Amino acid sequence: MEHLTEDKVKKRIAAALEAAKKGNAQGPAMLQQMLQQAKPQLLQGQQER
Image 1 (cartoon, rainbow, N blue to C red):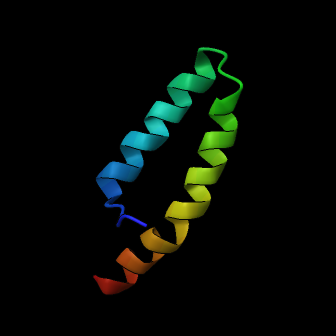
Image 2 (cartoon, one colour):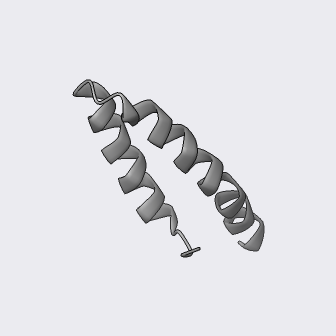
Image 3 (cartoon, rainbow, N blue to C red):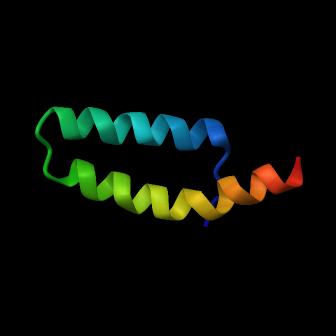
């Protein structure tokens, strides 16, 4: 899996939120999935600092 930087994660979350706003049924599911993938990496990133 690619390493997600905080910036990439934020952009993807923003894109998923946009999709959700437009009534895209996949928006919330995408957001959920991305958050699950991103959480460990974001936590890891915070510990490295």
